[in-house]
Image (cartoon, rainbow, N blue to C red; front, side):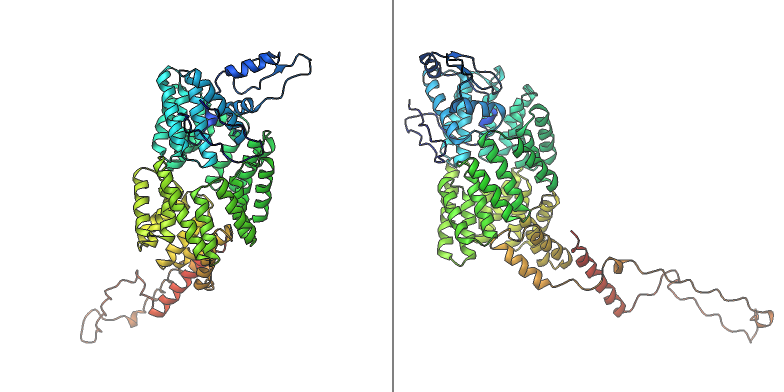
Length: 563
């Protein structure tokens, strides 16, 4: 069986799997599986150099080799570095991940019943596919993980293979399956920290914030350090706690030591800066990520996004094209297509939209559900009714994250069902996440429904959160605000209820001479009381009602000016 070639550490190009190799594929979570024992090849190499093996320590310890000269430990190689990363719950560099995959492929060729090695290899395929956007690796990952379970059942201690299957399900956006695999491991091994990252991803995909929070807290108890800080920062980010997310992400970046781990932490800081509407800071963080690990191709796309906000369009186009070449994810094709469209380059935009459809179709053949992304595209650039059907299917499958709620609300609005879409758009914003697109969608739906006060407030929130959140939508948000105009004068004070009517003065008792006779011809008739009692004030004139209505509207507009 072939061995995947070693990459240059600076190279970001994915390895080319051999068609003869029956094991190779998927995406997410190779970090969840402990490393198998060292390979026969590694052992022979050490013997040939005359080194005395110090042994591979569990939980990610580095391998120390005595070179016979007493010069201290040998620098770990790429396989050992990848093993150390996986057992620490951190990402490995692409070149180290390549070396680990090649090493395990060679080992299982001669040891086909080694369940731990098969579990490691299958999960590494998942991680490779996630990092390279090569969905062809998913089938090999599934086959390899199933082979691991055939060699040793999960109930007999092969939880690593179950964790690998959960990571594979998350990568394919099958969050219910990921939840089932992960919770199976958790029931049997509640203190196995490696299961909690896949559970966090599954709960987040299903929109179960309570379960995701509990899983994140448990992971932090079991696995201290940078991995726990990274997950906690993401939790805070999803809840809209920006300051907490930023502080935790900075701590993770400061404490990260390995290049791949450091690059991921810097990338997270770049995304947080972008979401805050600070594109210069975002570019600086993405550049730092790429300097730390040239293989962190997602930072190329992040950098492109921030460059658009800075109106450095030529650089943005080049960065997007580079990111798509190295990491062909359909969401990047959508972003580049919308950038072309905003520049009036409709032909180039259509080319990117065609590429997006092809990527989604290829992902579907590999078992990846890209319904959410495809629906976002259809709602704005294709068939909104098709987008609604796709997203209703997601909702039925319990995929009820803020992202799905927002997309469904917007698709319904674009399909002419704004009243129904309002519920979903409000749900997305109600999660607390500070996302300019979500606020924009809700504001536009409210404007369509003539609910102008809340519409103005949410559109202002979108522009204030990130003035350049989209090359197409951000200008539309500003145009909508201009059309709504400034809120009328007034404010919360005008919304106070009118004071109760003053009580009528009691008439003074009449003197004896002025009293009316009880009877007789000279008695005056007593006026009948009106049908409406004095307890109910008379209705205000129409002009007064209009004035009251006019004073209520600005109160909403005034409230919109406060953050």
